[in-house]
Amino acid sequence: MPTDYLVTGALGQLGRVVTTLARQRGRSVVGVDVAEMPLDQRAAIQAVVALHRPRLVVHCGAITNVDGCEAEPLLAYRINGLATAWVAEAAAQHGAGMSYVSTDFVFDGTQDGVPYAVDAAPKPLSVYGACKRLGEEAVLAHARPDFYVVRTSWVFGPGGKNFPRAILDRAKSGQPLKVVTDQVGRPTMTHDLAEALLDIADARPAGGIYHAANEGQCSWHQFAVDILRESGLGHVAVGTQTAAELKRPAARPAWSVLDTDKLAAVRGKRLPHYVDALKRHLVLDAQTQAAEASVPRADDKGGPGALRGKQY
Image 1 (cartoon, one colour):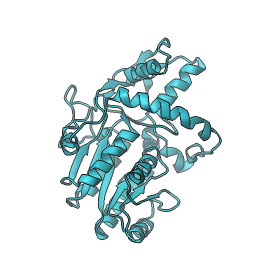
Image 2 (cartoon, helix red, strand yellow; image 1 turned 180 degrees about the horizontal axis):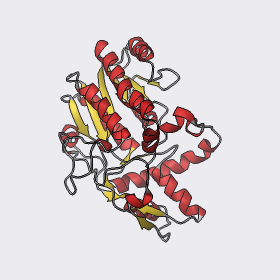
Image 3 (tube, one colour; image 1 turned 135 degrees about the vertical axis):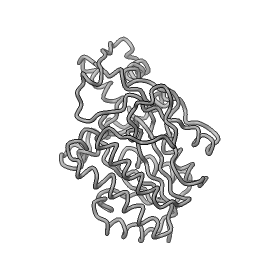
Image 4 (cartoon, helix red, strand yellow; image 1 turned 90 degrees about the vertical axis):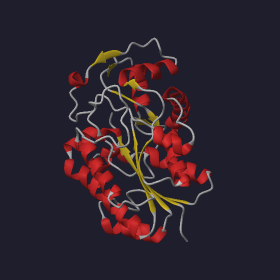
């Protein structure tokens, strides 16, 4: 029997939430991850899509470790680029729509002060941005009215590795904090992004590119300050540094604020402000940490699984 949604990367930070919220909406959902549908195997992708015959594939599966992609570019291109083409191919062959989660890192950050529109020219600075753009091109090449590229930015959410938890852990340990001031974007909570993805799935607007991010914008430094303030640790000092001083392997755009007007017109509303999202996240993430402590994670075992952990 056909299912409403097939969600890839269903064990990941976003995929888990998409699967849960879709079921809460009364939809039939099949969530798959590496065990059921390894993205480096074209035949496996074809077989899973053929078996479940989804109405829509929500493609969350990806390697999101930005510096890890720089270190292992062939793997990054295979999973984020080529495998996305295979998912799009399978969806098209079996009459399914597709919603592909992409990134603000497809932009070079030179459009300072002006949010990036959906039709702005991509110019990625890193392997991660380039391979995600390759995935975008593969989806858009089908020119189907039910194929969507949904770009988002600075994703955080309860469970696993997330930026708020990293900041809080460091602050509570007494270690000094220094956070980048010269990168500005829009933090986006997984729950709000998942709601937007499902609204697109329900509304079935015209195919193409959409931007989904929480309202507001900030630097990573300001986000860290917000995290500490909302956690009752506003007294903890947050030092400053530039991206150049941090010396990360992968270049990041200095400005990656996304223009979300197109999505807001479809949904009839915008995503909540990122500070509102942060407050909800902190409550939910606190509820998950004890349970996680007793469960081994693939992210901690090294190898390709380690590249799934978001790296800011």
